Length: 578
Image (tube, helix red, strand yellow):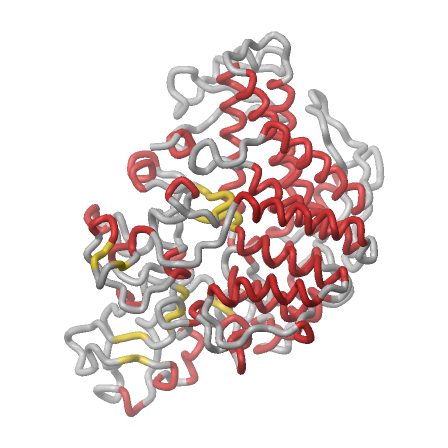
């Protein structure tokens, strides 16, 4: 078990703006008799390492378990109507400067800043002895990386924000917003400084290294260029850093890993299950395949999940996608010709085994994700294959006369049509091999594979966007077609196809459920988010009584932050009141 996985066992000492204590002998138990101050909190290098660990623990939830970050309410995802009763995320009438989801992200990334500042403070103390100077430099680099990532994210979502580069031991009430440009430049300074102490590749599974740092530098320079009217110098910086990531890493283009079938059907690693329609995109999301150390050269940074750790200690090192993202077919109303009697369904039992999880349908894809990005020339694509997006499901209730037959959307009565939608295999395993906990009473609600924070496919799309903004659509199309060739698409894009809409479509095809979609949309600036969301968001399109985006292109600064900053005015973003 890697150190990164082991550290999820412990509840770590939280040493930030407010300092608390914990028992040195048992990280699971607080010691109320111990109080740390900034002066005595750090006595050993191991305590600094523990703070670095806490950076990973903190960000993992917001990248992995917070579905709002992945695009709830955007053009890609929302709560289905039957769950939300018309009150889903893209019902923007309920958004305000006190909206809980945007406020939660703002607070979380400032907490990441606080953890980073505290780590940097400890790592630079002269009183601490280090057995290995390179480890100290790596701890500093990781803290700089996470602070840079925090300000990149805050800048994309909220615009210019207060810049905090130190630990405050007394309350401060007079923060002032920096410009969006300066916020991005602060992130750049941190990420570039982080390169000094970064190894080329992760020192162990789950750690960041140069590849991920280059990736986010490409993103932040692209973001900065965009608000500077596509500044050529900044765009070339973005392209240069993306290229650097590509020089260290490469796309996976042939089948690999734990479910790959070679030599006429002999499975690798002794796994007997045969996946007849598997492909390299399928392999990217199979348990045991995601880490660089597992042979995945595309992985830039992964978030570690381990069933044995979860089994003993709980926590959130679990992917609940099979439960949250899978449709509920147990309660649909079938058209009359498919009922076994006037009031019953032909398959009243649990058919979720084929769906991939015991779904509760908390999150549903929009029609844009289901059909829009796959229409016309874009239909033939292994990312859209039956093994990667399961649209036609089979009845697995052996008591039904329809057992083994394909269940299609056309069989569902309109009254419950929104309960029936496809499931992406990256969210729910194709078969029981993907569920480690079945022998312990699991019910296909959770899976425990690792998760991508970023992979090289997204780097290609960042570089394509930078080329497009630079006016070089030939190179932009070439980068997009690297992914489309890997996806065995019959249609390769032309330079005349390249625009923001195409790039957003391609990101949806490649990175659905992976990218920080809200960051992407708001980073692009102008009316991009409004146009994309108002054209495709679930409640805006299907329930037009709910308003779309109007008058804003950034999340609101939380009202709580404004109200508590009594020593200076913290300006609100346009469209959210004073």
